[in-house]
Length: 246
Image 1 (cartoon, rainbow, N blue to C red):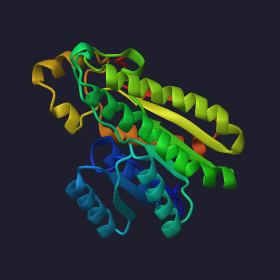
Image 2: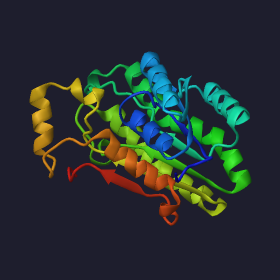
Image 3: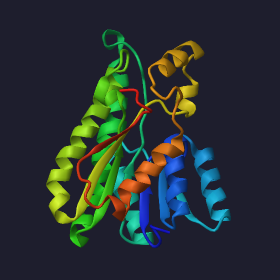
């Protein structure tokens, strides 16, 4: 129970990688508060399932792109359950399309959710973390932010920005006892991937050295490791979890 007595805050925790991260931390004894924006039924079901197992988990509605809303939710969490020990910025969206045809709203929504959302939540938790000179932030980026992908300029830019944020923020707060790292998943078997046509998914598989898509829990295990004392000398890094794709 590596996280017994700790409060973990996970954004976008209702489905996919976020859900797997919530489950892993709850299994390890953490009190987990996780957010959702549109997946209310999945979020409440996850909360109910974990509570029935005797674990501590609470779902909270939040649009992470709103600075004021993020601050309010974090403040409420702290008042209710104490200081946040671990922040996992996982909330993310895609609105794919070629740049010359992309609506400004599609660009803004992806950047505001994937990148500004992480800024909002980091800013909300940092004062308390700095005050107690301890804390961990794990940002869920993507290999697309490293390698790029056609029709995903907005998503690629947001995830590349998240990697840059990780490196810079680590230099800012590393000396204050706070570790900031990122994970760059490749193609993971989630609802998002299931929406991709079978023909395209076969093309994805051909690019992966191990010949299969990753599982959400394989990313969650890395998040757990980075948040644990076992990663005590890892600062400002991006761990690629992609089956050898890039």
